[in-house]
Length: 198
Image (cartoon, rainbow, N blue to C red; front, side, top):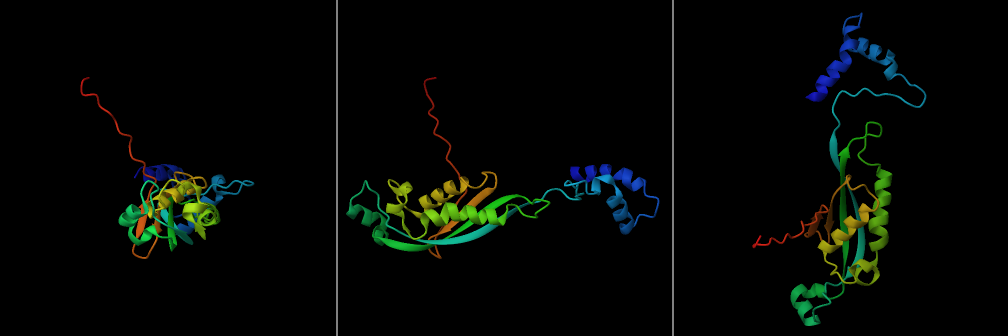
């Protein structure tokens, strides 16, 4: 409630200076006549009566890509045993839900500019992945198995090149209607070796 106290202290002189009865129209006239509320060239001060609101916003994009699940350290037989039919070349129609979060901008009313978000998703997801063979066309997967989990990490890292780390909240990647991965950029803490003889 700190903001309510600040609001009260900021408006107290204004409210006390009202010569007419305290009605909403009277208050609006008084506020609009104060220098802080008037246009001064290109700068205008906006009175807000509530604290900043933090929200999440999600946008969906899709892409199609082919791949096979195969670890280069394993034989074809071992890969078949580990990954089943997915060890053979196949494709998916992927769906990616990109979620951003932050305070609502008082001017635009948005967390992030929608046109900027669309452009970032196109650069980070569609261009490098759509209609590609993930294992052959995307260098990231040269030595990394192109599982949905690893693909989610790849997309996250690409999005970070275009979006602020404080804005990007999570991604949810579907490889089928029944299967999805959620990634929030988590990096496991490094292992700490404790010397028992100290």
